[in-house]
Length: 595
Image 1: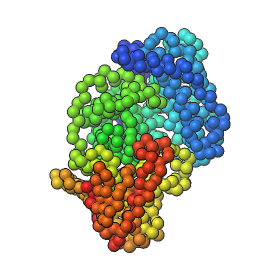
Image 2 (image 1 turned 90 degrees about the vertical axis):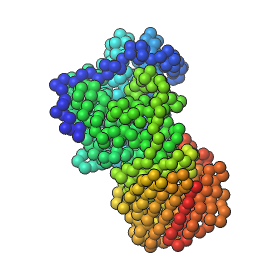
Image 3 (image 1 turned 180 degrees about the horizontal axis):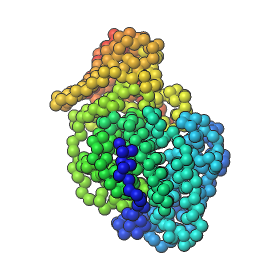
Image 4 (image 1 turned 45 degrees about the vertical axis):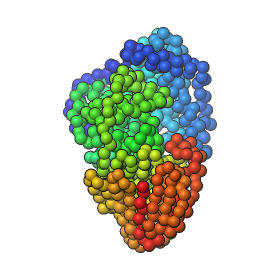
């Protein structure tokens, strides 16, 4: 797909970013936007630059905690972004001294990679401190390179007048930490044969292209970087089915499909015509529209894996993606997100390029919001996902397998909203620690099938790995109903002794949702249902005040467990207490009616 486009590469690559100039920002940003950028820069002048010590970097290897170091690390980048945009908007040199301090501080860092990623081997042990002579290109090393390259691109003349050595120093650091190791080494995320990739591939490749093509690199280097990037983009897209579904969920769509689009946009601008044929590919449009189809209401989306139920998106990148692939529905959705967003200028965004895009898009996105088309049913057989709606209920059913990127053991789980309110939920993931991406990942409760809407057999839960999967995934959509059927028995290890477990989920439009579970073999089965609100229990019914009820046939007496939510990441989506309902299945058959 992408490698085939090498034949369209020109003899010479243009400098990327002709439209990304300080003058363009100054002239095109409305007055209110310029004032906002300048005020944000003024505010950061009163804030000290964070101090990062060796002990801060080593904290991850000692305690597994990554939050404190990352707060110090990202605060530098956020402050630099604000200063650069403020200077672009004002153009009076008032913020240049602080910008020079920030650039110098970041150049003085011994490593741009996060402690949690400080390894040259996929899944390998993390070194306690970075090795300046052996840089790791991780997500944020590449993003740092891209940010600094854009800083120079926007303000190089002003910076050179202020300090002749600074610009050459920053360019040398990007070359040493990003460009040279990128060309000389193979990092796992670059792709290797059939090895599965994830968001890292598109995300890093996009930022390496920015680091290279925003600077006056020589033509030979540009060609080498672009050719290697095209191979990585092929390695990334090969793991997507033609339906375009992102197995990592909505949050990582922003770092996966959107970064693929970002990389393509950079390549098209530097090598006109090289990407044009691919923007018309049905698969790319399907990848683009995934987030549109996952949307429920306001900032809520269907979630699975490590994705949260609430996702804040400004909409600008989605809008540009929709425009590129000729998707008016995605453009309308993204424009609505933009107008609803509390952070349209993406002030908490670490990537400076995204923020510049947002500033330049203000005039286009601030007009009348196009009418959004009605949401429709859709099936994603590539990951075993089905979505159905009727104006009251929004239903998502996830079959798939337990070997996906950012996987939770959730084969066969389902999520239900009623009138936009969470009814039956997927919890998501807690704040990342070392354990999250270790062999002990499935010791974490949020990863386990017993904390998804699934059965447990004599205490035996689903197991991790691609071989633990659903089979016979079938969807049927009609005007009257939507139905999803599959067998999840093979998602459980042999010790569960379950022969088959057929689940049928049906939305009867304008009426209710049915879940029919029918199984053979296995120990005593108990179904978990995760809910955001506490139900009242009456014989054969669970009643949720002001929301709805669940009628149960073939069930024993349910138990209700309260789960206190203290984790900051989970609290972004859920109230302080959520609930797990444990329903014994009385005779290997359970029928739920949700209304």
